[in-house]
Length: 97
Image (cartoon, rainbow, N blue to C red):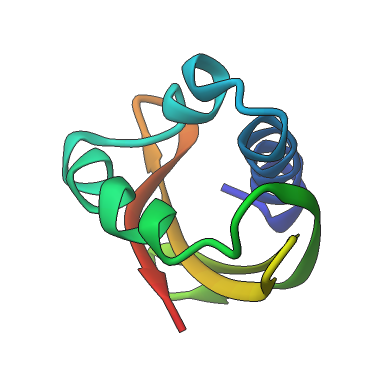
């Protein structure tokens, strides 16, 4: 799994999150990540207006992606850990930094 494919998947995920297209955004989440998504969404800064991918860094078998989401009440920095699941990049862990 290369950084370019993870970045492309993260861009699609973040864009879908801002657009409230949770079907697309959720398609990249494993079951454990889905369980964490509710708490992450509660920490978001209100109505989302944009995002910026601040980092894509390999960490062993996973790739750590840091995304800053902007909204009406400021910004939230979210760390997602991506891994190869059945040949495609998937989020295996989500947290707010």
